[in-house]
Image (cartoon, rainbow, N blue to C red):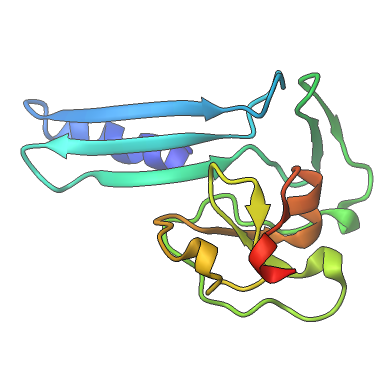
Amino acid sequence: MVRYEDEVADYLRTHPNDYVRYQVTPIFRGDELLARGVHMQAQSVNSQAIKFNVYIFNVQDGVTLNYADGTSTVDNSAQNVSSTPAVSKTANSQAPSQGNNDQTTVYVTPNGTKYHLNRNCRALARSKTVDSMTQGQAIADGYTLCGFER
């Protein structure tokens, strides 16, 4: 998130007479107290210098977040931490990895409720933003398998 905030701040510093339309929306599920992530959008007015529309997951390596009550705990074992990309601006075209289902790469949309094993699933055809994560993380975050892939 800081990368995008800095990009806008740097632009405004170097272009003091310009403007940027900027919006950050926290995304919650149900009655959870902690946001699952944020939807960030920005576009510079009168130029194309700044233009992004991204979803940033509220995750941190080595920390377990309890979205329901807003608490967090530091994981004692760094080996159990999965490496999940926090931001994806473009669609990922990798095939799902093989092996342990918890580590299989799956694909989700920022506001969706389903995960997809196949990046080319017809349910993702019109999605502009597709993020990847492990199947274990998707299940832990409340996503369920897409009906087209059962």
